[in-house]
Length: 220
Ligand code: ADP
Ligand code: ZN
Image (tube, rainbow, N blue to C red; front, side, top):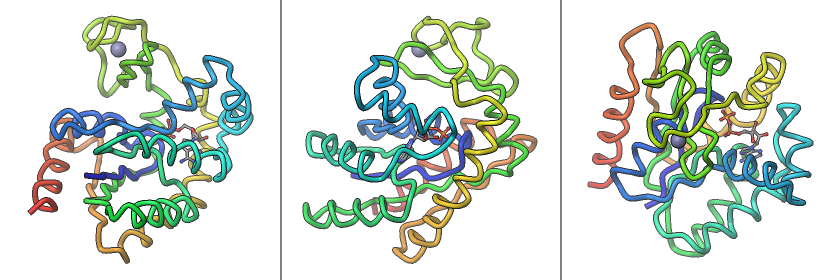
């Protein structure tokens, strides 16, 4: 099974994606997490990726696509979080899966207003333990103990690219490069949209439940 999480920065792709992976036993493949890990380990790939990520830009397609395809070769059922992010990436993925006679079960598009994106990303904290990678929000989804991950007890940190200037640029990049994927996957007949509004009662649990229902329906 292949599930794609689509959505603007801070829409909850990682948070909801983790719940889906637990329930359906999928490997969580987050390109953002992979890049952050490479940056932390100061690898060649990390150095290159950081030039783009720190400015809120996308890492170039050739680097990203070959990195993801290498991982997909080794993995079974996968949830893709943060990939594809450009039409070019989506087309490569389609070709790659076609060759393996596989297809995407569902593209889950988390739709959230811009103001909420800014609010969410500017108060987001993530677990410093890369094996865990849980995400919290000091306002909207606080951890039980301030600064400590509920899941593994490690320290929570602010992501470098969650600075207000960088968030604005990431939003521009989202609208320019990633939003066109919505019509791409609509045409493919696999797009499923969940509307999110942090001021109504769409909690993490509500959204997770909606995502589960979509997958159940798609699996029939
Ligand atoms: P968010 O969805 O909150 O913006 P991610 O953790 O998914 O964050 O991604 C962080 C950054 O990593 C992106 O802003 C981008 O620079 C880079 N990145 C992640 N996935 C891709 C991708 N598929 N193609 C190009 N760059 C990517
Ligand atoms: Zn943790």
